[in-house]
Length: 501
Image (cartoon, rainbow, N blue to C red; front, side, top):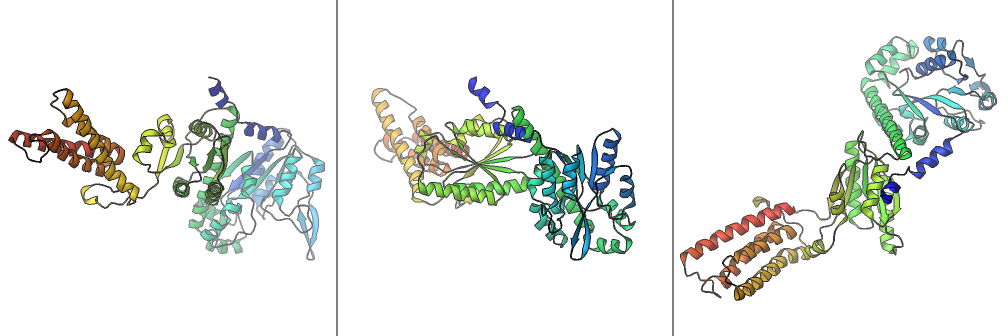
């Protein structure tokens, strides 16, 4: 009970993040797929409602771009004077960060988060001005188009053929307390563009032929919708951590991949990356070690290489020390709202499978709400595919396992049968051989079961059917029984091999 209570405590990291945020302002981002969807209009409409209720809200900077509807919304709102900056002989109007800090309103509207400030400003980028306002305890509303996110800028350039110069790091959006998606179907956006409600008429047609193509707008709209959904999912996970509510809450897929120092982990990481890309799901790479475990330099280097590979492929990485790996994995899965786990398992020999329990087996036994993906350690070669059988690998160890195990089990069954018949007159010694065939099928597969069936047929004939110690069969009914035994052994061995595979 005590251990269960410990697992259900709020995540200390989440509580620390909440405590560090106290005293700071909150960031609200109005996110859109493209210029003209109505981000600034929605932001100012909300500002007017808030101002009408008596709240202290100031317009720090808003770019109307000549749109009359947007300019009308500024009337009656408290406007912060802009700062005059000389740049290459021109006078620019920039956001006055010092004036905003001195005024210190409850909420300030600062448009165009991705804007680059003029030379000589305290910060090169406007999102850095916003961060300083938030640290000062001021709530900030801002607007951002999806193409300005750093992780998507290259993709947007490929889609639209236009280089994105103004970028904002993804962490700036990730830290937002609220993301409001301002969405508009591409057809309506193009219609607004043709009506001159976004750009001046002389620029509208050029925009339609370039950036504002329907295919471009559809792709950008999907990116905005997906990023907003990811942000909402992150907020839910943060809430679950702070509240110690156990997951998984399968509102979206989240993957956990287990990474170790073994060579198989590279394959596991790449498999998880492909799975995450297919599901459009974030994934976490987790490394587990026992407390006080000695570290081999070669293994430590392989582990670092595997974790760096996971990071390059888009995963978040984490290292954890634990005594009970399975329990720790499920604890991390609950806190991170994981829905699927990816783990590797090498094809161990039959003796290891009998004497040791593997971590994948433990996860499969204890998993209830989670999906477990097990990545095999050996490639399969369908050398006997015509008969429906799979030959797993061509290594010497595999040959020994496939041929050696049937020899050992049939020899043991023969010795047991000889010992029993010397004490008791038993009639169904063939059942011992069937058990041996089933054991071979379960431990090594169908090929080993077939080999065991043939060996059992020969051993049963040689040691237990008169005349013994010869392969001669004296009575016809003995021949019939032996043929029936061979058919039963082949059938049960095949079924046992199918169960294992």
